[in-house]
Image (cartoon, rainbow, N blue to C red; front, side):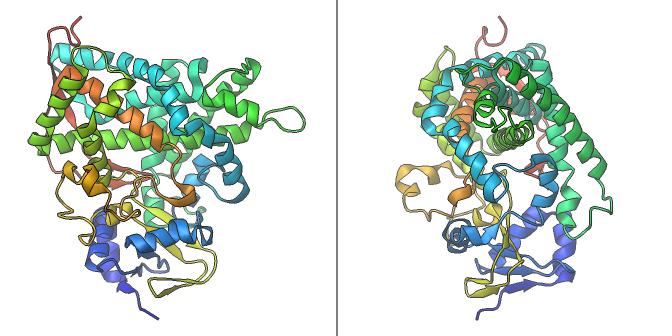
Length: 451
């Protein structure tokens, strides 16, 4: 039996409290991909980072590693029971939602998504007109929000109401920080962030539940938006829709779809500032492919360098920084005995930095995503959307939406980061930069944003 690489309490806790994202990556790298045990008082989770071990947890023995404990308890208070749960609720929700997020179905939404994203450029036009810097992170969240809301709710929600969801989901994503650092703290003991979290959940319900009720009253058997599909699929034997379950399904999908795309695109602005040659090449490709016209879904397959850049952003800054699981039965990972009930942490942020699988892992290199290099990669060395049966349903939506957003912005403007600084990754439901990324936008053409 192999012993895990142990990081004792006095070493692990201070560093994890200060910068848990970077510290987990350092520990995984120091252990050389071996299984790590973190001794943090009564909490002793195992960190797995080698792709073979990740594959075992997420795919080969996925049913023995469930979404319970640590990370999931605080999130379940907002997510409820849907595609981020286990057992019957997960199977039921995934069966209903999966057909709505296939590559083919997502592609059918392309034209309407392109229109929504183009319309969302209005606020950027105003900033470009006045020369005022714009908060890049907030704008990415706003644009992503409008696109995702269109997919989920269609015409059942106004733009103003949709924008009210942004701060509430942001609060939920960030206010669980202390719950993640203190997973053994009982809920009878309030920790910082609890009050804000619960208030945000209530406001989300105050927005989402009335939409579900209205959709039921205005039932359209041909409507394509997710809420209508759920209304049709979630009708019980009494002829009534399960409003609570539909609410959980919508909140799960909204949270995952907006957070992944918005955070990925937020980090992109810092990456382009730090890598001017990548920035110039990306602008050139978008100018060549899109030209002076509007960005359409047909442009996306031709934006090959943009896709490579987005892949590399997902590697360096994966929004889903940690994937916790709980062992159901005794097992072994890498020769290390894992007892039933143990917490096992899969960290994409760590796996994406292992030098055994990534040449120059700390360098931003889109060329590593060229087809000839990508084919040789371990299938679980790159997992921004997880893997196995629980792989993220929204990954096809990301690869359509994210290029449309960036191509819209960069076909219109040159961007300059006005407050360059070292960014601090702050973990919550995803990894966000602590600092704002303020962009000054300059129109590429006199007509861009100035009509």
